[in-house]
Image (cartoon, rainbow, N blue to C red; front, side, top):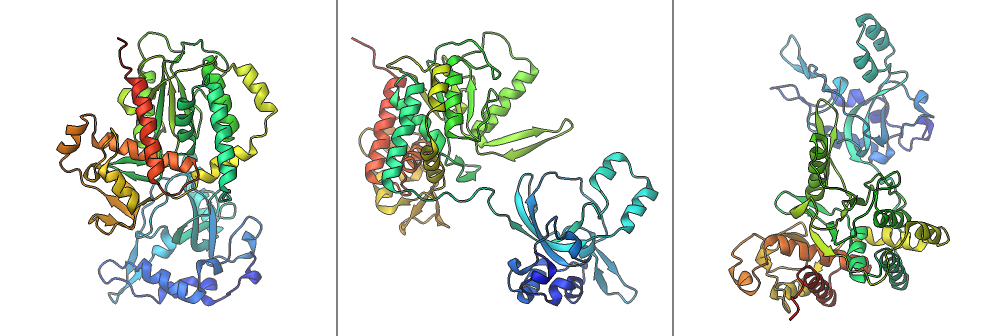
Length: 483
């Protein structure tokens, strides 16, 4: 947008420093109330969308000191800069310098890889380049402070969430969802040797996404899967995967185009333990295993910058192939022994089949159901509370799930219901395996199964299906000894 195309070319945009200077400052520390500043600017311009958008094409058309907005991704986090926040004049009054020296304290700081829209004051000061040359800055400092003619500065007055990098998927009719779901299950079952139950649980990995994060309840909305009993394999290919690992990676890449096979796949993390031999992990191996463990438990990844590490939030469900119990042990939420009824898919034949298959509809299905907002209606919550069959779920043991229209619950807060971990004696008398963690797992599976069917609410019928799935999985994990 050029200056002439600005819908509201008002003094708050052309001379924002004058508007800031007219605001009162705190007599104690000289700070300007950022909320008052934002309110004053919004009153003048109407909305942040009325502020001219800065781009590479029009940056030369805006004079220094103009209020502009800019959208981009946070690609680096530089060291903090120290500055004088306010100056006290001879008469004892204070003058704020924060609108010219960097970042207002009250703004929520973005994190690495965030897409944000920054509304701020454009600063293009050629004199700074000459000062930098005179000071003979070291190479590192010069690299982070290029001349403003090459990299203009924005002194942020508001930091807003930026637009999503991908458009919202279009909703699909129930018939299209049902057909695409059957095709997805069919493909995954083919890879897993006809094991439909394993294919169902693997599908839940593909439709999950992080819905919420709580220190006391962990990650809500996604899970981890350990397929045990897989045949031992020989590492081959650029990613050092077994034959089963290669076939599964091919299927995931076909279904999730953003996946990259790195021995681990991004967006869906596939870890193949079947190619590992007996031995001792070295220091690097131990750190890598710890990093995967943290990813499974918290959906966070520690970026190693040599002198320090920085935790970043992730959204990548983890699936592990193993011959026996995984090295990650208790970190994995769902364990299921593989029980193929047919030969496992060969990578070469699967690759040929995928080249001739059109999976656009399946990809649209996965994108659409992952974007669904999920709730548990009150009448289904009552069914869940009472428990049915061999699995008893009691409300006080639940953790955090989105429940609508539940006025009897005193812990409701912003549509998220927190259930305090009170006495579980009665539940444990019925099933000693019931713990807060197992109930969290069960409700998470219920969420994912409903979403995989394109359902934004949990129904009593789907809850019964979840219990049936879990009973089948439990029977496979703990087979009854033959007489």
